[in-house]
Length: 412
Image (tube, one colour):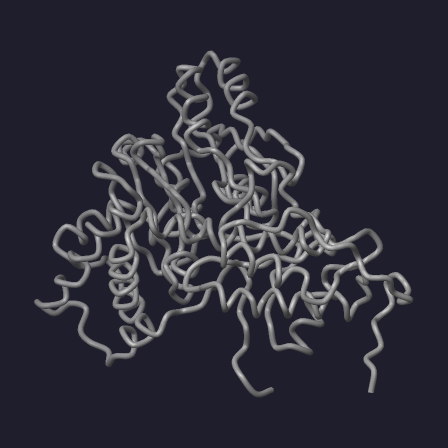
């Protein structure tokens, strides 16, 4: 198929030309006397993106999933208890990781489409008078449902309960895109990866670790080798890594950090919010809703668009890919078939997203979702991005003779 593939999944994201160029280089000796210049320039700027002065950043050849494991094995012992909230597929997988490492996890289940409930977290911690919980697991931005939780409120809940539990935060689809303040929010382990807001290929696991969490390493008894923070601490101090690092990705990370800091983090957050608001205006223009059950939970990095009852979100995704060369995110877990996801994070702008919205419109009509009026979502997004105000109301659905669930027949 001619033309570029339109990539609008919530990760991996589009890689900017600047980053691609930075990674296009010959291999070099990662033990050479000049190599440390690169890592020693990265670590301080990584702290700026995490927004921490006291935290310790680490870089692994891994992904966000690897950083779940690294966070847990460096701070826990077999049989330790954790408290976790589950409101999406990635919450579920974070919990599964902990359980498979031999940890006991007490789960607060929340309807998918909602965020972390600080009141329930505080209640559970107050009941734990013996302080058996070693940590609280929360996903900042639940990509499966397009929901962003209030991490500052979760920290306040822990503090109100006067509980010493560590705060583990999955920021894989938020850090580098959404406001994230490791120090201000009292995050002890901030987990992310390279393929989302950092605009890189997958392959780097990034984690920010508080001094409190680092201290836990001395008593933690879970087995660890590759993910041992201690080995990294010794090597990183001189600009090296204990094992072979992914050199090209490090050069890409250097360029990505330059881009984020040149734009300014507050501007990065504002840009993502503006783009997300335009996409949400489009969803309303279609007469549809997002999965987030309240606007306070709306994610600025991904919109999970609910398809009408009787339709299959997977069919929309397949049509978009096969017919229009565009990748949309699938529904996961409980949301499988109920929605499709539009990623709007990283290296993306208004015109790119207009292409995604147009492709989504055509794909929905192709699978028989006749309530979607051609151009309705595109027009709503255009109006928002052009004027800063979305249309007051969506246009009425066009009358159609298409049968529910049946594919539309194109005229010759």
